[in-house]
Length: 390
Image (cartoon, rainbow, N blue to C red):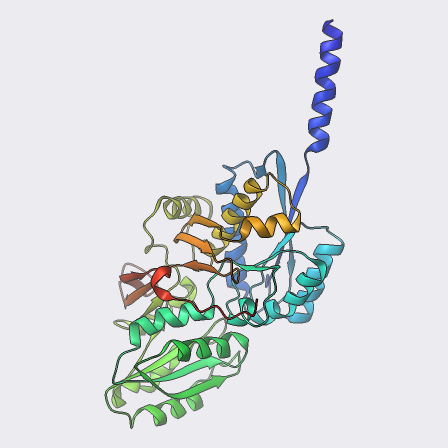
């Protein structure tokens, strides 16, 4: 009898083992190239999010989570090759990324072709969940409209004249378009677009000054920049002599070390570790210091939110990675993240989340400019437009 029992138990164990599987998550990101710093934070955050949501086991319903990453170098052709390889060679169940909006735009149709879920973070171009969207695309990061609406909440007042400064590609042009759409009271008097890797802002700054200095009232330069180059160098041209001020947005900590001259400037933040007050952000800060001896950065929180979302979805599906079941579980998903509540809108699969109105302070205790909270701008009050054609 005992022998029969042991045989039965052994068979049950074998069946359970056979049923367990690996859940493969692909990550396409700019591991090298001009957006390397952002990509590394996203990858770190993703792994922390998976760790947090699985309580350190990296398993869901007994299935092991494996992340397979590939470098796109912020180049669309390499992004497409990486995406194809993840699906056809590595047989991933879903894909996360990319860092660049240009790369993201090149992946949307491939996700539809293969019928695989692509969770976009941190690329922000509106078109990703707008006119170029399809039902396999979700975004856990914010989009350009959210940046624009948050910034408009700071500067959109009668008597304010604004000149925009952005990089000449999807991220910059979509961002300015969204900002203009959010402006109801202020006046946009000039749009300046410069090459993505610009380091000399003299010519662009001169054109901006010429457009603003003749305007009455408050005059503001609104920059939208990512990666290499520092548009803050325009401050070296002394815009103050024309009564012109420069807005600021919270950036990665390395970039904010070069923003000390923005002391007193207003703007918005997507994330700064000292802003959100909640248990998950406390865990993130503590764990990041423990592992890396530094605070989490701008895109770390976004990556963590993505990791948490993936685990919560897999719990809802019982570990089933069928694309249709993943879509159903993701649509309308509301979770807690380091940045507070995040809600994935069913209509366009865009994650809605709070932003922050901040004032930048040159605190000598920190090597970077510090964004101090003026107020939280909740996603319920932002009215982020639905731009897809579902």
